[in-house]
Length: 142
Image 1 (cartoon, one colour):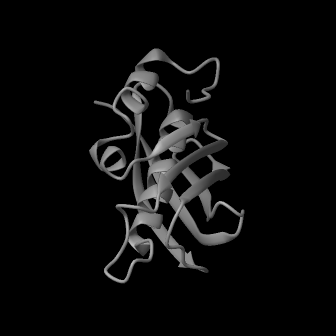
Image 2 (cartoon, one colour; image 1 turned 60 degrees about the vertical axis):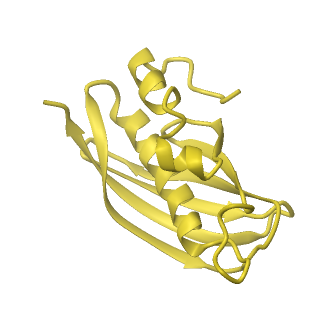
């Protein structure tokens, strides 16, 4: 069960949670544990998301980070608005070959038109694997 803010609009719940985070997040086995504009947590299995030599693929770190940053930004934007990623970067610090990776997303700046988040990926022992920073532009739906 995903922990959500009490005041989250039903439209956002359906768009963000009802879709399982989108097809890619579902395919990669993401599990959302907590979602809000300021703080979000999700995890993914290493199995099925590895590169050819058995390490968790660096792109998988980025997908988890971008998903958390985008969902958190969309929650901040609110109903009738959406978030579009305009910048992302990642630093990989440590590799992992098994278990689960947890992404913890924290807001750095939540403005009217931009939202920036830092997402830290850790292994099951709490060791930092990578750091992703993402900025989203917040737009009105037409």
